[in-house]
Amino acid sequence: MDYAYNPGFSELPDAKIFKQKLQDILRNNIEKLRKGLLVQEWIQVDNEHFKISMDPIACPWTGKYDCHVNNAGMVKQNPIDELQICIDKKNDKINSYSTNCNKCYLLIYVPNAYNANYCSFDNLLLKHRFNSKFEKVFLYSEESDISFALNN
Image (tube, rainbow, N blue to C red; front, side):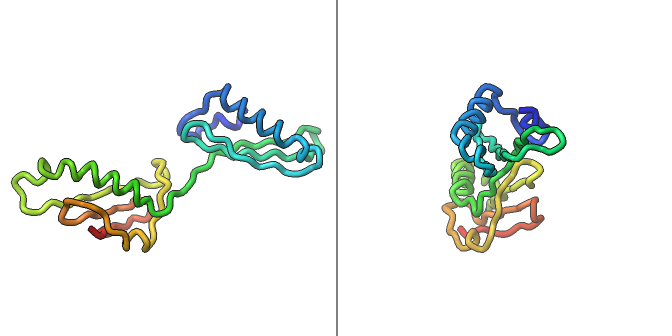
């Protein structure tokens, strides 16, 4: 349990929920562990994901078994639906944005992984046609320090 409470997590899981899920993994895999097999499972508590690794081989110096809990992130490849939701929210405000101007552009800022962003983009994103009321929509990814226009 101590490994779960490290500064790498954005939110600490509820200890009771985490402990129960860990016990469930142990209960469901006890035969594998008895056979000497490595067990690796995932625990999800709210939006946090924890990878559990249970090594059934006892440490020769301490005689204790090893269990690691690592936080992990998942990368969303081409988050098209999420981007469209973001654009839709801004589409609703275009009238107020475009007061006293002829053209209105939208810039979507994607923070880096240090700020809990786990998005990745490739050419498929550029081929997608987004529904936008803006003249152009630009995406700036801090992770790769690139910006590009989305098709709209």
